[in-house]
Image (cartoon, rainbow, N blue to C red; front, side, top):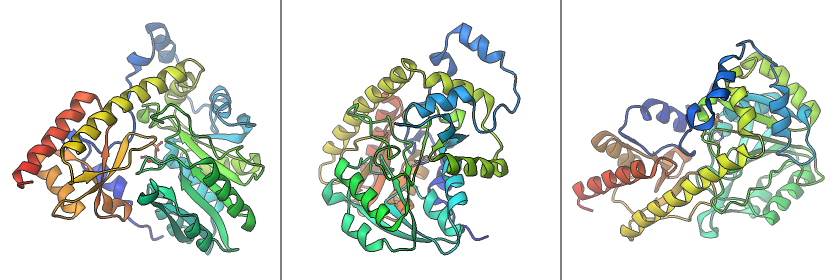
Length: 373
Ligand SMILES: Cc1ncc(COP(=O)(O)O)c(C=O)c1O
């Protein structure tokens, strides 16, 4: 099987633990167990028997996830190892060689690479910077054909932090319905909205039922280390995805599911998400002030959600050269736009602790001075 290198993840895997300032992450600064749970709860966790558990996910956890989607119940949910596995299983179980998939761009490139490796033809439509990263519905219309099996979006979007409007979502439904295509929505950044207004899910948003979404705790909830994600969709599709999951990882870990179930309880969930949003708001200010100080060199449309800004630069070098030199010479890791097929941009993650972010940005200042900018 031929598979493209998943550049974004590869580059992060190689360097994120080696640099002094990692500004490549797109989620809220992770929690420790001690910050989340009291001693009694930690003792309860320590008493968990480490079996396989329910391979489609702990029933209580699946119920808690189902509450996030109008009209869903536990049978509409499959728990996976991160939403990366959810993406894999959704595409693996639905795409056939020769199918067409229309993908929102820019995007986290997992779906791009997977669909191509499964023999699908990937077409794209774009979010436009001049429309505050709104989608070109004209392009989308042009790309859809009777062979379109799936329209895949990332909403809120990685790397721009853009969120589709109600009208744009309705257009998407209309276009998908015209050709009977699946809508696949990667919604991992749901809950990380800076204005606190939770992005509506594609699940249950319309009468059109060919919709599958993913979700997970890695970004807004600051819990990437428990590797808990999920798929939500029609019962028969989720049953099929579960059968595929038998081939991938069998089940998600018991410890992670224990944490996830509690993180999604009403009260706890709001506490976690509010803490994340407060951090993101403060840190976005720090980043905005920093780009303002470099007037003319950097500009960006403020993200509506997620801990990342997709920054257009005016540097006298390519994004990749800048990001590589910054990493090698100054120990600061940002993602070049090439990972999204867009030279001229840098993705800077701002979900870390504020002082760390400030120190990382100060290092970038030093680098800019060293190259006389
Ligand atoms: C859009 C998108 N989907 C999926 C993932 C994978 O997330 P997880 O850690 O839940 O596997 C990421 C991670 O960066 C992402 O940005």
